[in-house]
Length: 486
Image (cartoon, rainbow, N blue to C red):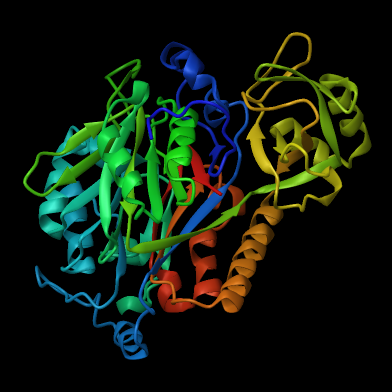
């Protein structure tokens, strides 16, 4: 197996794009030709998808004993004071701090998490990284304080997780012990960790031009033990290309993750960028990473993905009739612009306003019958721009004859689709059996949250309906510039 992959590729994991928060000029100057993939077509901020990908974790054993669950519900895991450590009683733990300094945040999440975990992720807000004058100090202090072998970190605008520390608890509405529900903070000071044990986790990084840990990845692939991959992507890396390679290298492994923030630096124009990802391992300094994909290869833990969109279909399902590279020029046998105007004239006033605010395209698989694709089963892509002749720029990978349907961002559809997909997951698990889940990572679009719903903590707390209050509260994640999942 050699990275990058060559030949034909049928996507196993899809990159769901959303807005990269940089100016149009910065995007033009920073994105290479490879960056013109669909994962980054929302970079100029014309439209954003509203997708959420939840990665539900299962150990390969038969789950937790009921008595262990009761001990967690009694609050034995999270109730702590001072620098007291807490004994591990589950294979996954999450903690989310909103302290005023990054040092306080490290201490709060470490106290809440306890000791005995092997590896995990941390999602650190841009405000903390600015405060620490870089990502490395935060990663190194946190890894040492947690006592884990490996820690993979990413910079974000906002994060989510189970509240730790007074600011986070108050923000989430109070509560004590392990019964505290998770919180979502879309901006400001926030840090969230999700730690695992017995996951058989191996950290890695693959960069552009087949750089990074390619030999390690190929060796793990040849061993045939990798069951799942949890991933972070840099917004300026060739993510589509790397995902093709990983998909060919690990065709049976489930993949889930999110794209980090564009970490802008500088006093005035802020046109320079720092690495927004890091791997910190015991005995080593933090490794700063950019223009690629970092993550964990899991050999002893299964990941089940639940992908939800936040859009509502407008107009009928049709087929793409003409394509010029990343531009859709014909829809249903008519010019793309004419098709848009026909639908705009046929929908109600609310749908027209939503189309003007941000029109998106839902894609089906080539060869599928467009009439048979369910409302939540379209792959949503942003329209990054409109060409002078009315073509819609949606990214490479579109094809003539491919099913498509226009979509708009919609609050009620986002919430109902989330409930639908989580209930579907719960029903599927009840029939297939297997061990109980131990926790979740949630990679949610930076267009969701309070800005979409008008209230806080909607997505993260919906997990409790599908997984139960205890396991459903064990969630960690961040607001992404794009989501990876299938």
